[in-house]
Amino acid sequence: MIVKLHLIFTLYSLCASVFKVAGTKSKAKGSQGQFPITQNVTVVEGGTANMTCRVDYNDNTSLQWSNPAQQTLFFGDKKALRDHRIELVRASSQELIIRISDVLLSDEGQYTCSLFTMPVKTTKAFLTVLGVPGRPDITGFTKPAMEGDVLTLTCTAPGSKPAANIRWFRNDKEVQGTKEVNATGKSFAVRSSLQFQVDRREDGVAYTCSVEHVSLPNPYMTTEVLEVHYPNAFAQHGPDHALIGGVVAVVVFITLCLIIVLGRYLARHKGTYLTHEAKGSEDAPDADTAIINAEGNHVHAEEKKEYFI
Image 1 (cartoon, helix red, strand yellow):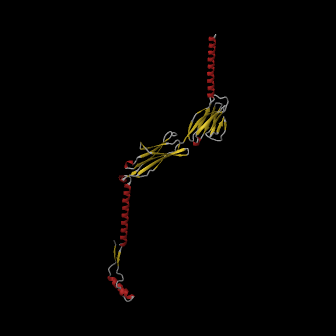
Image 2 (cartoon, helix red, strand yellow; image 1 turned 135 degrees about the horizontal axis):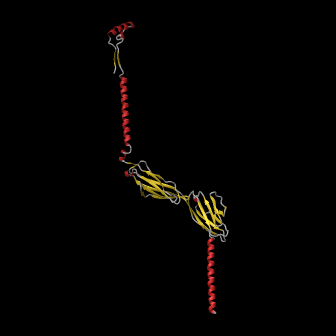
Image 3 (cartoon, one colour; image 1 turned 180 degrees about the horizontal axis):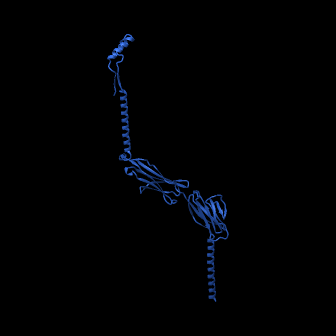
């Protein structure tokens, strides 16, 4: 009898344990199904972000999306915040999807999806906004550079988030620069400097600044080619033109001088006229005597002579 009672008690305890475990699993499953599920989202500045919240099981309670400032964006299919960039994609008892267009850096932060059960259940989703860097610009080039000069080339890439990476290349070989990062609001301005002394081997060398960022499928690149002047280079980089110009100028000057001298000479020796008209009339006492003397002398005067050069 005692053995039978013990056996019955054992069977009862076993059954109770089985029902207890089953009830616990069922409760856990229901609780898990009631919890909202979200995912973190990463988007490039100016792009579009879809924020999704869903539940596996819902007993007709509402879902809600809130922004990082805890302002309600949508409660079910009802829009709560007046922002034309935020739109409803889908609203049901198990899913709430919203879209944020023209995303700004200021939109980044932790968004909250709430399921209004008792108590309210919430899940967080982080929206990461990538700031696209501006195209790089190289400063510090002197054209042409003189052999022995010390140049500092600086490459700047503004507006990146997170901070962009800058690499330098001398022709195809990477060289190390000095990097500097400055925060400008939510984005970063990145600057890298490269300093070196110029020698003649630098003539014609291409220096390239490459900007790499997670938002870029391919790096941004900009290149400058260095021109170096050194003693032998003056004979190679255009002095021939100066020499030719100098020779032409001298020839023109000499030609003009010859023309001027020749012109003046011809002007002075255009002609010489020797005449003996009225010779001897200077000492005549009166006009009649002067005429008689002039006529007499005119007979014996030499003919008018002309000399031309």
